[in-house]
Image (tube, rainbow, N blue to C red; front, side, top):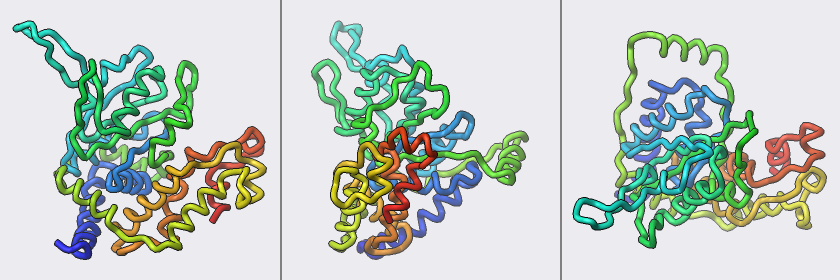
Length: 317
């Protein structure tokens, strides 16, 4: 199949995929779009939202429709690295045998990642970065595609271990979930309080997802679009000459080079699912908030005056 036909096929399959997901998930279209962009680009995502917004159900539904293996890990303060990676045990013939942990799946939902100590967070982050884990000196490759979706609860910060900026940077997107609208909530209540159970079918498989990820990387990008993305990221750094006033006034730290790479990859995926054969500046702007919001650190003045990260990023356009 030619790349042009592959992109046309992706547009069609992406529409079918979203229709399938909507059988179970009401609304949250922007959230689903960003999760899918992240998977198609080969990145990871961080979901930030209050409890009860169907984060687990959403990820489980997406995993089923993509035909991928899914595991959920509930992070708790007493969780050890071996609880997620797996461990070596002695079998009957007194040989060491490796028992795989829940991290060996295509899609991992790391629930409340900020509830677990840094040692366990770091074990997950090695898997995210290297697509492999090391246990007792042995190196184990993880099955591809590999996608981690971590959730963080923005309230109740007591007894939590917030992710350091260097670890937050490993996530391609930070996605904020909001409450459903009145009409959506009515629909959710109607759908979930009867004995009728909706189900979804798999529209893809692991091999097809890997092909889509390869296709996204092959998409050409004009130099002016790359320069725009890099300029956008450099404008978030308060000490750069290109920084605008709102950044100098309200930002402590700007985004690093990984943000520029992710902007271009996500813009390519955004262009592809919209039937374009190369991304333009609008595609970069469409993904900018999800990619920059967790990489740009506001100062106390911004928090005191209610200046949101979204407002700062939109001023950069």
